[in-house]
Length: 454
View 1 (cartoon, rainbow, N blue to C red):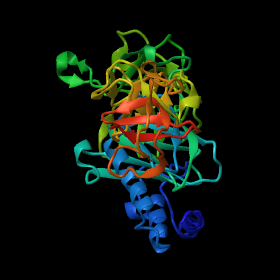
View 2: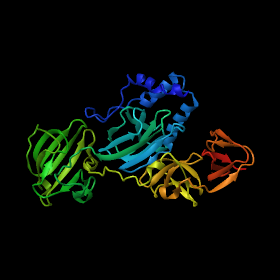
View 3: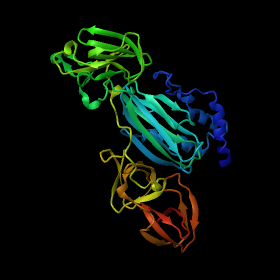
View 4: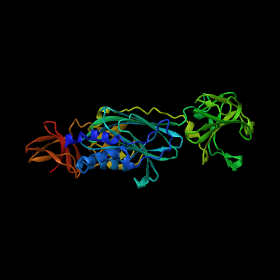
């Protein structure tokens, strides 16, 4: 069976030849309709398994069940985020990450693995209602399994998004996943300025509440260069109305226009092609801003929607995640909780929801790590995060047992566990941890597993 499974990637590659996946290449608009889920790389991979006669095998069923379970057990994360994890061929696993994105933000995805030339399935979904997966989940991005080193997606609507990661069958490897968000437009509209120079935001009241602000105001000295936030075409150059001296820059790819107002003077002409960073004019206070300090009013108008919040399109964001501060050698290994109760949490934060209280000396397997938190799998099948300070090594036993009669050593304590070794009577074993009426033991030969207590 193991030899048969190793041929699956070759079969998948053959099926892959005719598949076109959704990506965020520069020459494609961000709102291309996504492919049907059954045409995803993962769907094709499953088709290949069924075609080879392996689709109904227990291993494939467990692999598929792990992918579905990950969606229900998704981790809520904040950006930037980095997690180093382990995929174990003996126990099919998938990881899912839930995040909030705003229209105008670009999600950058990076995946590194210690095992080259293996298949990884990365899929991005938009969640309409988190409680009704998968019915209300919209597939957005399927990344080609051999091109998962980096990918990006531009959010077009505010919402909750979910990224799922799973490796091919019989894959044991470490990986590091990095996620960050950045503004869609790479250049801030006022040269040398940043988020802290925005003093008025989209939706702020104007004229005593009779209208709302349709952009952001970026304050700077008179004469500070106002620059193009993207490559585009100057749609118009005007001097009239509330905006005074203004420049309109067209973003054809996204179907929207960038509006720069209150300029002291303009440098460009209508129809000019500009690059991101090119100077369009200089900060001033013309139009209805003549009684305020010099600033740039910056807006974005989207075709069919009118003014939209420009802040996510230009806001500078932190992209380097906090470093890992736990021993990465522990990832994939078994450890145990300390001699006190510990709390398994839904996310790597002490403010996240408590999932279950864990008993002292409970063996758990570390699946991944981020900052000072460990994603663990409990003997009963629960997954969640523990603080690294709440676990300890299994090297030092907590006791010993003299086996009076022959005993079986099991792979786990759940219904799908199976015995894999036998201990003769009068064997003395070390107890490394416990879970109810089961003990995690180590034999004199160094074999570890679960044994039911008498």
